[in-house]
Length: 398
Ligand code: PMP
Image: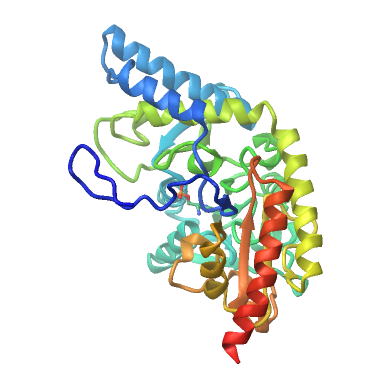
């Protein structure tokens, strides 16, 4: 089906029916109806520039203030404790946090610490710091595939200006002991700044900025049923970040550029809706995850995510079948999963090896990631399809 939009541009409608089983929510999510309505409202009714002094500008500013309040409340902070700065997403947020801190505070203290399981937007920022002469320490999981608070703490010394580590790993849902590690680090080295990429934890597991002891937190809208192209950073009062871009000085000069009010308002709406039922959704994800573990191990898949991982992500291996082969086999049946992480398209990720996944499974990893819409029926259909794939694709291999 190739419909035409009114600009005459042809596009292919892949999902003409809505009956697909979408199990790739860690890559991105479907926008909620109320959230897209909020975006349209801001686009069509509150279209003023928030920097304008007239009423339309002030109304737009109010929508931004609403969204800031939602995000602050979700992180358990108040405006006395710090700022919310909107970005284009977590890639920009992570870059701003890492380069911003390194530039402001890394003139003399040249040591920076991260882990070997970060998203590329953190990993590559640290590679660049290394090229600029920083001493980069990368903490790896131990022989059990665990990153301990102790190992993060031990990596920091008096010469360290920054530690950046994620809360929930995007490939397998592993939850890092950030609160324990950062609290110990802040107590012993109060001058070391702490940054946490909370993208896969935000609105999924309870997050408290205080418990995390994070000076800077980054989150992203499109992982929580808001549109793509919007993210936010919490920046604790007193932390000075040099901006990546210069311009009109919006958002305290940390992120110049006219604020995308429709995206910001939509993001705030999503946070408000999801924050009201975080616990119910968590329980639902836990049930789905447990059900999937049982069903899929029952048909011979190998469960790679640990039991204490975030219930929203389940990494499995289907022995002897390449990830992409299985992914496309499932796609034919309208089931959408991921091979490892979507961010590593065309490039294999080192993260499973870091987490000690046995070599024989490395080519066969499938990531399933759930939402409040995922049902046990979806998992039944998935398990049947995977089982089918194991029979048919194994035959092709012979
Ligand atoms: N960090 C993590 C842990 C992620 O999963 C992602 C998205 N894959 C990002 C950062 C980047 O977020 P964005 O797509 O908003 O730039």
